[in-house]
Image 1 (cartoon, rainbow, N blue to C red):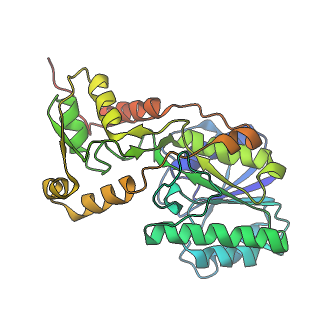
Image 2 (image 1 turned 30 degrees about the vertical axis):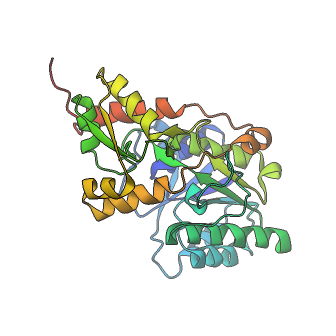
Image 3 (image 1 turned 90 degrees about the vertical axis):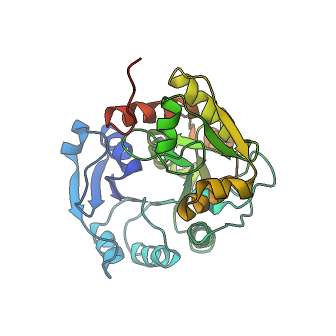
Length: 318
């Protein structure tokens, strides 16, 4: 069976492509040819690489011409691109189209844990486009039988890239402060949540959906760890990891924004903690036999190991 993976060298594809090869699939990796997978694996030697850019007008048609049985679309951020892909793939031998959405399709949480099929009210353009694609794909499945599945990752983390810190920003100086035993500041009471997930487990979810196709068709699934973590719990865990005593101060939202003094960080933090969801994996466990390999804590600890190895966090001699 031929599986086409769009965005194959990114966070998810790094782990998904080797899993597919080991599972006996014929894999076609679609990339722009500008980056390598985050983690090396000998299975990449058995992959056919095709270099395409989504900005190409005929991108969807080029994917259709490969005539894959399965298409995994990891880098689709626009509802119009989703429509183009569906139109192009309808006349191929496609048996399964897997769309990478996001927990950002959810807005503010009303019930915890959140159901992946719940009505969603996204807070930003990114989430709105993801949700629009989800609704469109489900409509196409319901009316025309287009074989779609939606996977919604949480805050993708692990080795090799920048992860969300306990302030819900990507300011790596926060990690260094914790490693040095310095004080950090959290918004409100630090009770908002982040739902990190290791990229391996997101890849596992896509793999499980492919191998459990009948149960996956027409459905949405959260790809997250079993538990989410409060900002406060996250910060304390990192102080423990670096063998430091926690030094955590809290500020009201307005004062916290003044403290950050950076519009990008303020926007990032707001859009993460305004949702503060805990996203259920019950349906994925039941229908796909999905069982996360990594806990939230294990995920961020592995990311810290990568930060240290790459010199982003420098440990001081004691």
